[in-house]
Length: 85
Image (cartoon, rainbow, N blue to C red):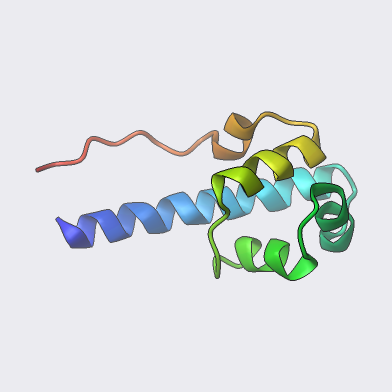
C-alpha cells in the first residue's frame, strides 16, 4: 500500500507542478514575477515546478490568487482514485 501511495503522490505532484507552470506561462509571468505577486521566493516557485518541494495550503492559495485562478484550478485534472486498504 505504501508503494501505491508514493506512486499516486508522485502523479499528483507532477500534475500540480505542470499546472502551476502552465498558468504562470499563460499569464506571461516569470517565476520571479509570480513569486513577488504571491509573496514567496522565486526559488520556492522553481522548487515546486521541479517537484523538489510541495506548496503549503497557504502558499497554494497565494499562488492561485497571484495567477487570478481558484486553488482548485491548480489541482484540476488530478484523477480521483480510490485508496485500497
